[in-house]
Length: 493
Image 1 (cartoon, rainbow, N blue to C red):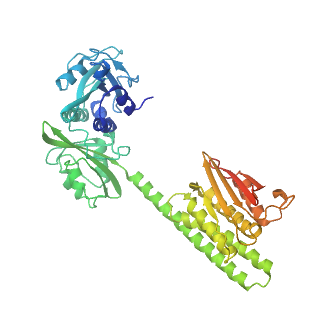
Image 2: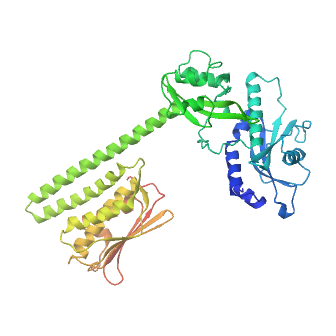
Image 3: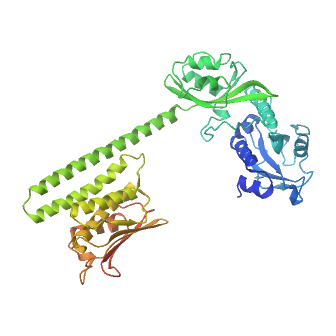
């Protein structure tokens, strides 16, 4: 399915600014469809240079959420020839909204067709075909009459090039919709009409009387609490195309203003609103949860550092070399886990940029093993962002492999020690290579007595579901190759 941009580039000669205007319109035209109870189809003229002057292409379509659709089929991408869309032709040629014509019955239901020119500056970019399914027509209520009058004003603004609002950047995915609640206010900010949902929202804010007939800005301000930002007067007064939130009486209501400017004069505004109390409380709970998790990681890191300090202190008091070495190894392992928790304490998600952790682990391995060592591990390639469930065991594995190379491979405290990283798709490859004395004859990782290698094998193969391989390095030394799946959920047993 081609995108809106694809269709515009393929079939029209509109420039980048025109295309941006079309995108802004389409991103916000659900408002017009719902107020009109009608389907909207945006037709753009085909490029004249292609010899198709007078033809049209449908580049976007939307259906109302407030009424039945007139076109259940998808019209996007359809090309029509000269004269096939009479009202569209007239609206484009004369630059006016066309409402002539009797209802059409081509689809088996009566459909009233209207055409609205889409103007940007002095140019007409295309035409919106507004199609209303009349099969369920009845005597309209006051709500429906208010919707239709607002839709008429909005259509005039599109024809005058005053909608969409270039300066407005609302979060349209989360903005209030017509059905959430609607207020129609006049130039002075007095509420002319309030939909039932809008009235209910203000009841939750603590308003005991009807909001209709009141000055919206003053009424909202009297409810007792300030909005999230300083835009209350502008939004509630309908003077700016902006959004804000109001909190009072334990409820939170989101407001969005759409100023109505008809024939060059501001006639009032539409204010869409919805009760977002539960959404905002849920957001706050998630923020509290994230802060709690980060605090837990911070405390775990502190506790691990305390444990490492105690082990290091105990190691200094031991006279038995084997016991001192065992405690120093425990210090390294605890330290590598502490580094991961320290990083997690600064991020709101359980995702970690592992490159920084790897660099710190490499520095720590050299420092702990031998202060006078002349070997500085080098990283080639990047790990990228990893989930905590992979980062924690991988940090321990990296610690063990680096320490093993420094203690057993590079026994003269000199030589090459590299960590080579490749990441392709959902696989992570890591090679720890040194140019030391290499593996002994007949070495088998399955039967190796080294606790460090047993830990590495358990974490890589058993927990992460990866592949571990020890091999001789070309030119001398050892390579330990790891192949770890990133898409697979790490195993817990």
